[in-house]
Amino acid sequence: MKNDSGKTISIWMTTAEVPDQPVLAENLQADVCVVGAGIAGMTTAYMLSREGKSVVVLDDGPIGGGQTSRTTAHLSHVLSHYYYELEEIHGKDLTRQIAESHTKAIDTIQAIASRENIDCDFERLDGYLFPPDTESLDELQKELAAAHRAGLTDVELVNKAPIDGFNTGSCLHFPHQGQFDPLKYLTGLAAAIQGYGGRIYTGTHVQKITGGQPARVETSNGQVVTADAVVVATNSPISNLATMHFKQAAYITFVIGAKIPRGSLTKALYWDTLDPYHYVRLQHLDEEHDLLIVGGEDHKTGQANDADSRYVRLEVWTRERFSQVGEIEFRWSGQVMNADDGIAYIGKNPFDEDNIYIATGDTGLGMTHGTIAGILLNDMILGRKNTWAEVYDPSRARLSATGDFISENINVATQYLDWVTPGEVDSVDKVSPGTGAVVRQGLTKVAAYRDENGILHEHSAVCPHLKCIVAWNSSEATWDCPCHGSRFDAQGKVINGPAIDGLAPVHSKSTV
Ligand code: FES
Image (cartoon, rainbow, N blue to C red; front, side, top):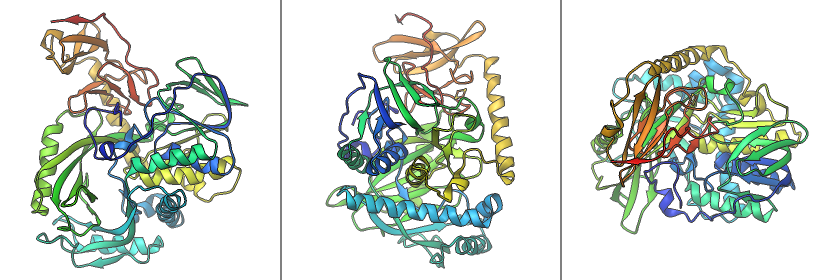
């Protein structure tokens, strides 16, 4: 598939034939306009079109071309926060609903794949959460009790995870998790949406979203979609200037895919409990090999540029635990939006008209949170009561999460110091072909990228969202904003919100 979300290639980009869709070339009217063709947008569009609503989906990249193509596609109710932590933040009742909703999301993916005959490698399998040496058995027992209180009564403490040659020690066993190929799934969803009369347009950049009767979605080419409701499912909402972006933080997470002999490891989902944690699964590669997919080594978006050493640390961690690991076949990264209280924000966009809905804050559980978004937003738009609405309400402010809220926003505030620091190099002449660097020019800074042919492309380094200074990501050849996770390709085109516009060009091209 066409990959415009970064330079690296995930396994899913090589396994799925995602169909091209037309660019929107006319004004349209629909019951619902969905902006974003990732897991959340496509699931919502599927649910609504199946219920007879007319739906238009718009995306400026291909279907699944954003972070859905960069997930490891764990389907689980094991979240990035412990259940006892979720209880402290959300209370026991809502925590039960969090567990229930993720369980339901896995069931829903399985049901949709079956109903629509989507061959997406969906499988049920066990999950194992194991602690590093430093963590006590007490911690696991505390989590086991909380998981049971959350309704996950089949979770059990076992002596070790089924990894030959590596003793994880005691760990928690979560039965009945799942995994799939996310792009094969979206390919099937696209066909199903179109079968129910839905319309999908890619290569179509949304420039402006306005609520009201009707809501309006305007594209950069001048077309307008009018609709009774708009769902903004763009990883980070482009319809919301500030409110949501103070409640979540963008992180880059890294993944390697290593060849191992087929059948040499029990197929399961594995996680450790480090911070950041490691996450592991298998994917069929060929007759003789599986691919061992291992992720972790997260850092805040735009606040480090050392992917090579992170990939090395991932490989070392992997080889220490899985002795059968052969060649590393894949290295890729993706962006996650971590909500300050550990679960996604799904529902009406705060301080907006009543008919603008958002889904964001995947918090590392993008596939299940995206599916929950489909279920919940479908009910909300159809006027049906859904008890998850309170759980995932984007307007919520859970007091116990204020510590994370404050520390993340202090971190954002310090990023504005980049306005007064020197550039990464003192002249664009020092930017080598195929690389980029931020260069000071007078009172401002320039994002200078020199392509492989030696042609220099200069853009303002000022992020059009709320004016932080972007940083070069050499692994993905992107400009990443350290404040709220906007990302731009090497030539300044926006590829991830909340920014709607690209980096402003400042010069004509020049060569060395
Ligand atoms: Fe908010 Fe860049 S993403 S300032």
